[in-house]
Image (cartoon, rainbow, N blue to C red; front, side, top):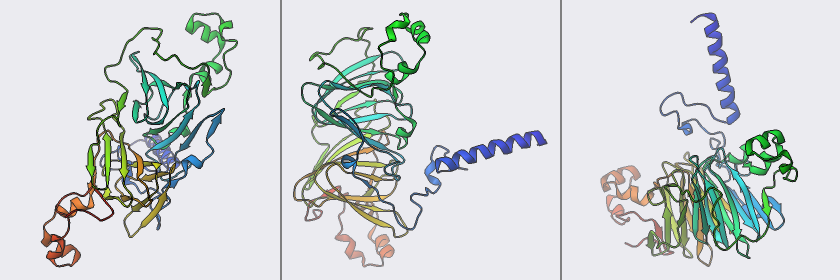
Length: 392
């Protein structure tokens, strides 16, 4: 290698190292370069596990009128590098203005009220949908969309993004762009006089407010050109995926909602005293939002590290990919938890399933216990138990 080539190589290598240092991780030197978790994360590599809880609904957020957006990103919860979340409430007549996210896809669950959305894809195909409590939507990364309160009552929904850093890069809003673009450029772009933009907002509006939207959906300017895959799925209108003695689970991933290629969503209901048993997810981080009730979440992080947090209504929990954990209802009423995974295909391994998948002689040797003991363990996967433990 000549001296100039060597110099260029060293400069490039130094640049890559600097970027890696700034981002808190280093590029993988071998194996799958897209999997960065094989480099120790400083947040998780200490002697003790960090907090994985954030009181989302108690945070200040962004408030305009009676509408607000409250977020949980790595800034508020440093452990949550893979997923960010937002609690958003819109008053009647308000809408989250036309915008897009350059660095994250958006998945949402409606808790209260009704919501209307519009979204456009790179091929110019647009869809308008109306949502009720229990419905979800998914907008792929970079697709332009808006969110509007429908009707004369406020709405509340939870947004989940497949990038814990997404807010740091900003959301691209249409008023922010048009308000700062030169008027001659806008006039040439749209074929109207420069004066047409005199009264446009000069800064980002974020929450726009106007008249109540019409009850019936209006056609877009271009007419109806629908995408091949819908952005809407009625999660709670479906029967539960599974019912257990201590609870119920609704789950949807890309196998049933094809457009949602990067996020899986779950609504988990636990009866008082019930437990979502010890398990881990080999391919995804887990983001939790407590809709109702009080739960105790445990996190196991290897090398004897163990942490328990109590999550109340409106709190967020976060489980890094591959870390063991459980969720227990410690309140006196049913608990409902919204859970998001940053993967389009759900995968999980339960501790009871793992033990049941081994012969008793292997288990006896591993734990230095008599083989007969393990005959008393469940011989199948135990996903949820009630307060009395798994049925035999």
